[in-house]
Length: 417
Image (cartoon, rainbow, N blue to C red; front, side, top):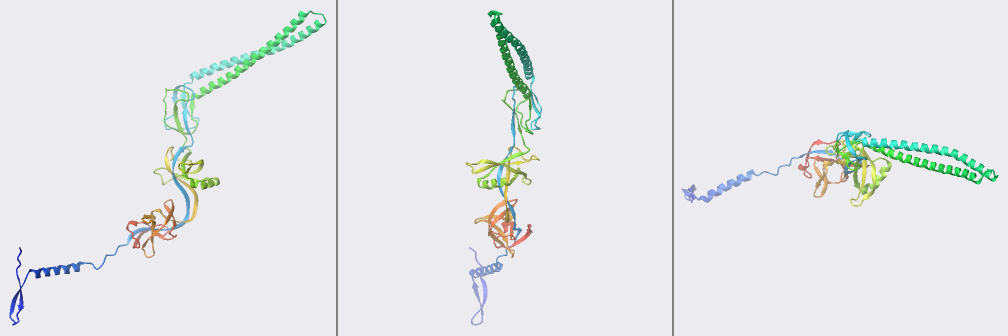
């Protein structure tokens, strides 16, 4: 236990003689406590510190004409895609292009061994010559027999007259008549032979044309301007008729972008498409700053009942080949223009517990949290349907340090403020 030394205080007795009085430890503790209380009271501030103005960037709400646009995801498709197959069978003698090469219409792509087809053509040409010779022989026979038949019929008529006059016998008259009938039968046979020869000529011509066509099919040429894909066969392979795909060619200039929009836009799309081409923009991935421009060229003939959308296609020149078949792109279809809309930079619109709002900078440099009704967004700007007037200044950067009705320090001002 700690012992305290007594504190001796001088005191004056009633008789004027000084006397001593002892002060115990409680009095010392009380003095220390009072000193601490006085020190603590002196250290307290007089009031809370003032909040510094929040540094912000502002821009003025402007009034302008804004295009009414529909933004969706689209898929790039070739206008024409042709799978090349062989129309004749044989050994593949040559491949005259590289995979992924651009080709022109009429370029020779593949060469199939033509020798069997050349031999078939020569054989059919010989048969054709034979049939034509037989037809000419039949025509000559018909001409000769026709003259002989006329003479024989005249002789038979004279013999019949002489028989009536009793000059010749019945037998001689009958012989003359039989000779005329025989020549007439021979004439009919010659005409039938001529018809057979002509039919053979026609059949031979058809077979010859088919053989020449097969010979031409040995040289497989590109049916369009486009770009080749992967090669499915190699030189030396045996190909069969319409059996194996040899290569796929896609037309990529121009090119389609197919996309679907909600059916609520169908009536407006149809109305505007009649008056002129609707402008479409396609934004390739990682290249959103420079879109490709095209025009709407196809509206499907039915709404998809499963999705409630209508399928559309736009055509793009694709001069720089930034659009590639199978690629997914962002598509913006411009329908019309909204006149005199109030717009602000999109980053000015914030979302809170009570909905969307903007911070409006008032004349006394304080920020007001103003509820707004935003509309469509175009090119980094958002249309404000309700809650803001043109000319009012809104905060576009520095929101995290702004409090409602708090002071702001405008460090940078956007255009129009």
